[in-house]
Image (tube, rainbow, N blue to C red):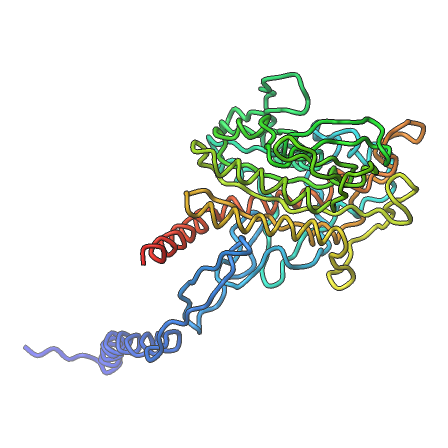
Length: 449
């Protein structure tokens, strides 16, 4: 028996069949076209060279020339890793969200850097962040930092500016956890702090010259005493303690402006502004470079030390209108632009001396598995004349040695950015270690020929 189907129903069935057949065909046509648009089948991937956070290490990454670079990261996330970028070259830009702690929320601030407590009238110096040319430097993320350093240890080795950075780190981490004081001694020059929830230790070894030193004369021609520096003998107060640390940050600078007596092999070989007859006068750079050479050599000779060595480059002071003891002060209230100031004079000499010794140590380190990294903050710090305590590190009627402090940094303040760099360097260590192994392998092959 034949069943009659109405025309309207036939049309609906035919339309349904048409769509079932046509839709997959359309998809099969569109998808290859879209893929062809995004992928170049006739060209090899383009090899672009990028600079990792270590200024002296380059790595190659395969990037298709039509591929888009990832967008600017959110706070605390990884930055774009496919752009060529030197994170130490850039500008200070406004950051209205700062600061991320206050002088009342962090107990670790040294009195002389507690600028808001002692009446500094402006607060704009706390509201800037570093913007590298061509990429982003993420702001310090304390939880991320803790996760990376869980079960590890870090030591600052240097003068009071190194301690200044350590206190900044403690304040930045205080948003998550405060540490316990686990110092082995009551001497404030040697401190250890332990974060229980992350089993992380941070330490401070005060060693303003890095080498063995003693005060020969408390007065001296400059009124700051004459110090005897044994340029070929490292300061064992820190050098014999570093084996247990995963990261050490080495720095020194401002104490070398004082009068010095230079010793090598326990013999007086000369001095710096000692004004003593028949004693050869050397430049400040002479003793400075020798001190870093000895410090790096001591690290290289520590067989049990397997950590990463960071050189934090010299941070210039900003005295204007006179020297530190002759009315000099720092009253600027905003950063310089990179085009407005450049490193010169003795600051440039000290910086170049550091870099020269660092390069030698880094090369020698690759030969015996030691890792040396550069936190190149000299230009970045030079651009922040507004970040010092000046006269706001004490009450006006107090009798202090450094009345206008243009050496240390207010907390909160620009020095917090130093720890943005530190986190970025530690986070990138996996990439840098791989590159070190590649370079070490190349050096071995060259030597075997």
